[in-house]
Image 1: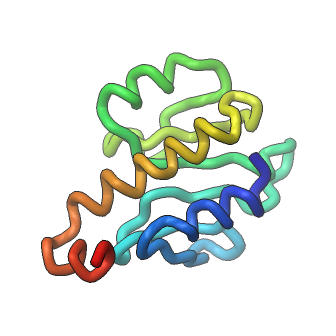
Image 2: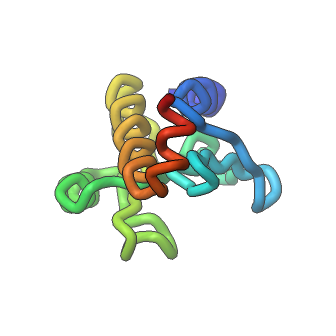
Image 3: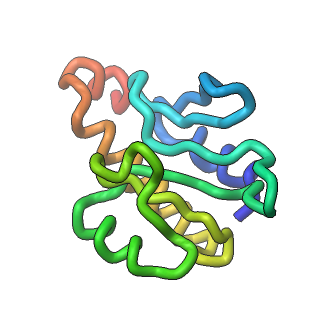
Length: 118
């Protein structure tokens, strides 16, 4: 899944916003909290690298797959980085982004969640 497609899908999730606190790196947030980030034209073919929050079980399963690793600085919070775009097909990327969004949304204050979900 290409970066523009990832951005389009991530921003279609309820309350999702795009921020760029680290220059060109796209950071996807819900309720002001980060749920995923992508690369920004990184050298070495990493143009479509993606990192996202996942459940404890998903973290254990995903980090055993080729092309997926614990995300730098965020692994302790159960984030993974997809370093090889071929490691996941588009359907799985969409499912994983939806799950990351849901995990962060669930941790938001009740009032904030209600404002986002209606």
